[in-house]
Length: 82
Image (cartoon, rainbow, N blue to C red; front, side, top):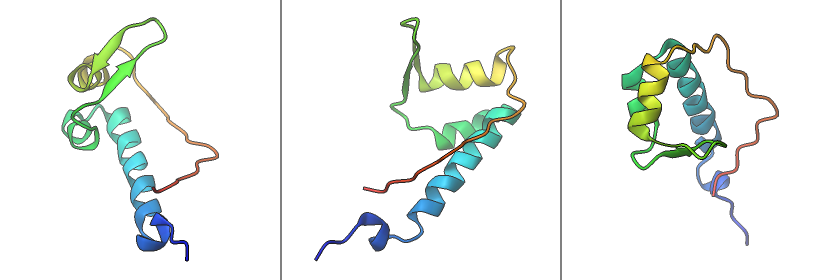
């Protein structure tokens, strides 16, 4: 018998999609408190330039940076729960 994680937790896909939506909203509204709850404490973001950001750096750049995201759209999203 083969069981998938999704079968064990049928709401997992909805939880992931809801978290993505919450991240999108928090990013567009520059909501640092929401981003702090959504992003993992060990987050590191590596840019193609070689620059590395910690979670605190990412939140700071989103909330205090000059750039503003007016829209964020996900397409062809597939959620796999392991």
